[in-house]
Image (cartoon, rainbow, N blue to C red; front, side):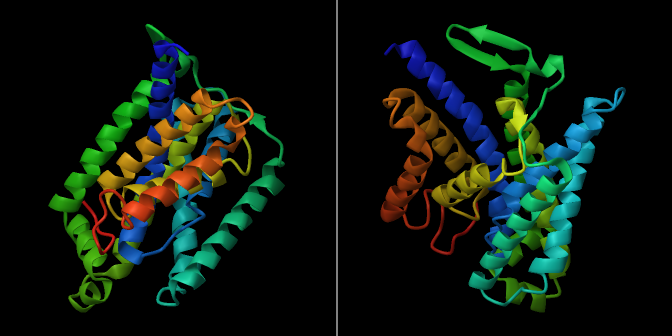
Length: 298
């Protein structure tokens, strides 16, 4: 097995990890404030990408508008689930909201199946996004490069927002102590809504990245990547944006190296390997790599 092949798999892992990282950021933002594990978060990717698929069927619509509307639809669904499901259950306990999030996930999957059929569909990006560049054994598309750039911009923008804006400082306060923040006059519903807007919008954007990578979409496409992104958030330290990104890259790289280096009869179990990796890390670092004892942020 050549070094070039291993390097190629490593780069493929970075590509995949960047997708997990964006979704994990959304998980961390919501969990940091509400301590809510939203298993329907991955399905917001599906909502966004199916919206984009419909719009791409009409000629003359620019790709930036397609992406904007797709992310907007993910935000609408995210805001709706927060207002109709999670807000009434706030304070009901983590078990209740966890079960509710699984129910919302199944509902969204079946809704999309009813509207579009459960069959896989081809998803083609515009030609300029699929144009590739080779550097030795490494192949990168324009979409891959834009994804890497997006990760950096998103992380910098969110870090500045959390430290420099009123809504960002309110998010940090709610993350530290939700009840005390409410007593101090912070509008909890506004803060939670802002977290869902950001997380849902990022999920919609990630749906495009995922569809562009695999060239097909289906109603269940967001569930397993959503679980892996949740693992990434936990691995890095849930509630920490930096931890979410770190966890995303670790899981993406580990998954692709496992798939590329293990015998072919073992590679179908790469999903199980990811969850085993999470268990091993949590045995050593129960709060994740960058997590504090409160599951804090950084």
